[in-house]
Image 1 (cartoon, rainbow, N blue to C red):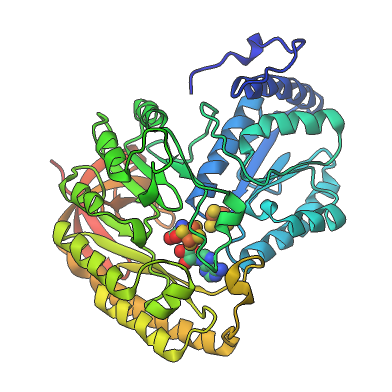
Image 2 (tube, helix red, strand yellow):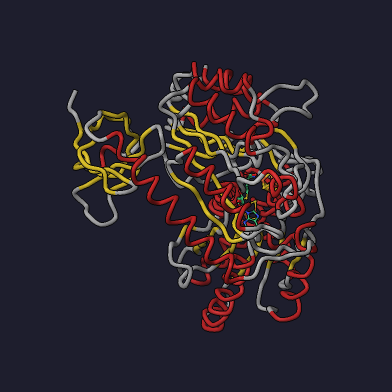
Length: 483
Ligand code: SAH
Ligand code: SF4
Ligand code: F3S
């Protein structure tokens, strides 16, 4: 984003109609309010954004933080101390929702002691009408509620709240709009998520995401490239391209373009060292993409390829549009093109109608593919999705038993798979000082595994060579090689 001088914006003018200029106007306006309030309070006002859910939400939270900083708030890590707390919510599984309600109750107690405090709620959960009804009825202390389609309007919504003093609710059902050039405040200086598309059109029968994130929209490739170039100029060496199904990128652009073509363009950006992406849907994973991954210098040796179930019968009921055999063929193709690739996946246990035989098919895939790691989920019924009204919902005790057996299998395999790099030397991007031991730093290899090794803060953001000495389950202990 280019630097904007907000103090030059004339607030006695009408707000512009065009975006992002309209939001710049409201940032300037909200700044005035926040400046006055900070003067009264005698200290700068602070904010805390709490993120639930996936990488998309994490990136959205960076955009919220960017806008709040421009408005004049300072970041505060402790939500109990902040003047403005925002929960960016997730609703992919029921337990994610329950956590939000629980934490809101606690936050209300904090607000009672600090009446000037503001509480905002946004993200996927807010796209569900029942949730907003419940909040309106029983959580009147919330100040601001908005959804996934209008987070770019955050500054305008804050200005409205500060002006009116009332609860502001703005939820859109869907949008075809993508607003570029708004501020974002990155969590890491050296890596960043980059949205390449929004929404999802796949309607897997268990999944609520298409209902809360709307229809698939791809960003223009020039905007993506420009954003990455700006990030690189600002110190970023690794990007994570984000979309619910990156493999269908570009299909609906005025000038259609494949994901593989986009990757080729991004590869050319000077100074960018690593490219990651999430998530790949097996049904759209093309030979062209496999070829690009095989020949690329920058695309990381990691592919997250959610299988969900190993049973073709269940996959059909899930509306995943591939079979077990197709998936296994894909894995073979990828491994022959990129031999050292690390494969990870998502698996759901207990989808309606899942029998022991179906479950055995899932275990069979896990044993055949030998994933580096797998996220395993207990099926959660989401109201409004086709699977929620399917017959034969599997009893809880059966699901729990399958889940435990799956987890055991996954963990014992990944322990074996991860240790194969012992005594090799790998390039590692240093991310943080180690949480438990300040004499160590933690870095990430191309294949997404972590390694801890002696080093200082000055290494953060650098790519260094590390000899992997010892594998401890899912991470390594190593030593940096001085070149
Ligand atoms: N777009 C991605 C996944 C996004 S949701 C993809 O298609 O791969 C992340 C994961 O949550 C999914 O892969 C799935 O395993 C899990 N998930 C989604 N809906 C779920 C539900 N109703 N119950 C349990 N797990 C679910
Ligand atoms: Fe959900 Fe399927 Fe879309 Fe992934 S591809 S977000 S699982 S509907
Ligand atoms: Fe959750 Fe929304 Fe992501 S439902 S998983 S935060 S797209």
